[in-house]
Length: 366
Ligand code: MRU
Image (cartoon, helix red, strand yellow):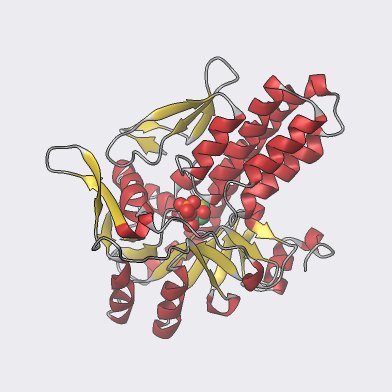
């Protein structure tokens, strides 16, 4: 997608053909800073500190992290160490483990001399596959938006999204945003309600930034406003992303997603989850088994923003000594999800629904 009219991806191989470029997402939206990763430690730090974030993107970054590790030491031990080290950086998004398993399985049988190049090739393939899966999610989700647009007599289709499941969370297109970008680019009138998504404000800082740069009409709202807007008929459709979907269709996503799903259920608003198949964890059925990341209380107690003089600062929002807790994700039970938008099509949020699109996973599904 575009930044200042220039097509961009979130991660790329630098012209030296080995170091890895990223957009530093902790500096957005106030500064567009590009960084270079040269070691597995750099890749791990970028994931941990959320310079890169979003389920698909941390998977791709981890894959390049293994490539960087293999470049300096392609031994069996170094491979196992790199995989374990990168996997430990964030617990909830399954894409991280999925990408690392993919590399581990592909590299282990190879002779050490061949591992670095194979890892770069594999990482590039995961990145390119992600772009194509997101594009297909866009095509499949566009049908839903078209259906709603047909009933709106030229009025915009109002879509609410939570957190950032946009191109910044992936390599390009995004998951939840792909249908929105494709509708907008096809001339369908669409407007996005953007949840700010406290405590880290991925909606305010990242989704609003993306939509602004791509020219998609949007309005930022406080996280607590969604229910009110649904009661007043201002939301036609909700599309969110996900960090892990279980084999029976439970959905882990950014904290607050569950509350949006409850309000959507109460108000009859369709609630869709967009995901590439790399986000399905076939090994578990119950959402309660998904590990939920607990992040620093500091993120709740403080907020980062630009001051009037242009400097970016972190300021306290509470009295000193206020205790806080910061679970970063929640689980929305499958029964509250209208459907999944995947690269293979749209299905019900259930074991049967998922297996109708991915029949080859029947024996793997918990
Ligand atoms: O903590 P983050 O910013 O990595 O969380 C991101 C989300 O929760 C996204 O909705 C999810 O990863 C889906 S991204 C296509």
